[in-house]
Image (cartoon, rainbow, N blue to C red; front, side, top):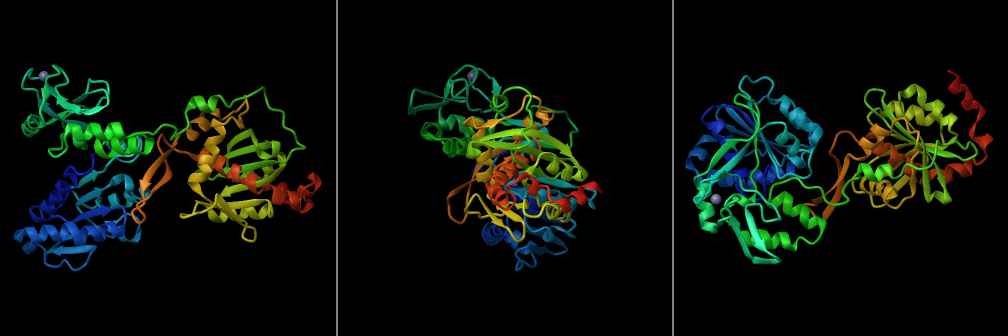
Length: 486
Ligand SMILES: [Zn+2]
C-alpha cells in the first residue's frame, strides 16, 4: 500500500527482472488495462533495456508487447480486462501494479496462473482508495511490517505517520505551511528535511503484526518517507485540500492511506432514522413496485415499495430473500405494477421471469457511458441504468427524508449492512483527465442496494405500465393466473 511517486513501481520492476534473470522463472506483470501494458512496454520496459546492457542481452525478443522472451523464459505483460489473455499462461511470479484499478473479478484468474508452480511469488502494489476494498484488504489480511527510523535525540524507534493534532511526524502552526517541520513523535524535537532523509537511510522494516513464517507480508509506505517531498509541501497540500475530492487525493496519493470522503456511503444511523410508524398495513388498492437483485445461490434480494405524493415518498413495505420459485407469487400478492430484475448473472432465468409479466417487468443492465439516469427498451423489456446516478438517488432518499422503512422489517440487519457497503470513490478518467464517480463495495456485498436501485427505477417506469393496465382487475390478467398455479 503506497503513496504516489515514491519508487515502489521501480522496485517491483527490478524484482520481476531479477526473478526472470537470476532464477529463470516466467513472470506475468499485470496492469489495469491493455493500454497501460502497452505504455509500460514502450516506456519503462524499453527504457530499462536502454539503460542496462545486461538486460538488453537478457531479452532475445522484445517485439511483442504482451510477451517478451528472455531465452527460455518469458515476461508476460497483460491488462486485467481481457479474461482470455489471462488464461493458459503458467508463471511462477505474478506482479500486480495498481491493484485497486484492476477488474477485480479477473484477478483470481491471473492468480490461477501460479497454481502449477512449486515456488510461487506474488507482489501486489497500489495506491489505496477506501478501507476494506482492494489493496486495503490485502494489506490488512497479511503480516504487517512498518519502516522504523530512530530519533537521534531520544533513541525512540518509530514509523512516520500523519496526524493533524501535532502528535504525528509533521507539525505546524495554525494555517501557515511555512512553519511545518518533521519531528520525533516522542520527544517532539524538530528534524530538518536532511536529518529525516538521513534517519530514513539508516532505518529498516520491523514487524507490526503477525509472526515469523507467515506466508504473506505487507508494508505501507507514503510520501512522508520520500527524499524529495518536504514537510512544507505536504502541509501546504493538506491545508489547500478544501473539498472532499482533494482530501481523498491527499490521503490516497500523498499518505498512501485509504480514505472515505464525507457522505461517500450511508451510515447505519441514517438508515435507522428512516424507520417510521408502526407495523405497515398493506394497502392493496395502491400499486406497488419491486426490485430484484439476483443472487448466486437462490438468495435473491427483493424490495417492494409503495409510493406517495406522486413518488415523492417511497414506502418500503417488504424485503424478502428468496429463490426463483417464490418471485411470481410476490408479484401477485403485492399487486406489483412494475418490477425490475437484474439481467445478470442468470440472464435466461431473468428473461423467463420478465416474459411472465410482459409489459410490467424489465431486465436491468448497468452499461458504461450512460448519459441519462435510465433508458427503456419496451420491445426488449430491458432497462439500462446509470449505476452511479441511480445509487446517488437511492442514498439521497435517506438524507432528504423521503424514504420510509417499516418497523417490522424481517431482513433489517442484512438490508442495512448491504446498503452501507457501496462507497463512492472518484477516479480520474485517463482519456479526459476529468474525475468520474463510481461506487465500489467496501464492507461486503451490496445486493440489497441494487434491489433498491431497481425498485427506484421501477417507479420511474411504472406510469407507463399503469397506463397499459391501470385498473387492478386488468393487472390480474386471467392468462397469467395459470402460470402461478404451477
Ligand atoms: Zn525523540
